[in-house]
Image (cartoon, rainbow, N blue to C red; front, top):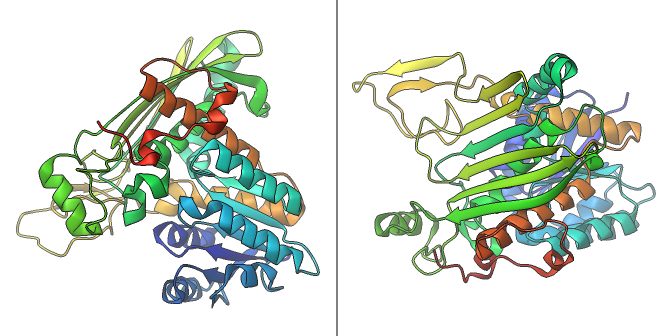
Length: 411
């Protein structure tokens, strides 16, 4: 089988995680990287070449990269506010090609709001380019294996699962734009709840069943600022990310919870509970999942790694993330995630997307699925704003923009 030549849009933390994961993926290589600055694009291209995933080169212009015959598929990891412009540039570049792009994959969330998500879907449909929605937690090995065992043994014997829980918690994002509600489209809800609500839906959906086999009928959510609007942490954000990140004037939520109620094809009630936080202080990033049914349950916690180290107070060194993503300490008992790109699902999702684009198959998650996740998120923001449950199928959501994304939210 031929090797899929991938071009990356964006050269930040997430792109480098994807590049790292491609070491475990057959039949692909990194052919190009473009970013807001040529210097950052060159750094990611060098990283890909160091991992023997190239030859990768840096492109100054996205449209030129999309038109270049050395590129066959594009992975989008740029900031959320750039989605429409990025898609338009890709479509314009694709129109100049002798043969069309084999696929475009976009990192979560698909867009900042439902109107933008619909536009993104339309642009790719008009261009005739296959799409993939990059939601790594659905491909997390513990989630995939846990779902398989629960449905094959527990559900087959005593009935389908009815309650899923998913949580993602850490101390806050790496880059300044994540903290900017207008640029990012919200706070932790838009940044991370997309993971949790989609993983909950995935766990509750029967293996091989269509997404529409369970229907969301109600969303109830809450957002809050628990940590980062306290004066000392307002100043910390300014010191770290610049004076324009001012949570005394324009905060984003650092905590969110969301309950999605579904009905299955037989009318059974199913519930997915999600919690996300930028105000969690522990060893590092914590992902937890549960699936419960009539006579069984399943749980997974990413900090239960099976590998840990202990460092006494006499062991000192510089801060880093060499043990776990969002590492908060360098002393004491520290869990170690041996292969983060695999443990968090990046390798498996990229393997799936590469195989689908090369073989001309529709990925399990497309831009349509990404749009449905954005719909749930907008319903959740609306629920938090109105302090009541919301129908996620309401047509009014197409025009809804969260107060956080308008810079008008006041906790």
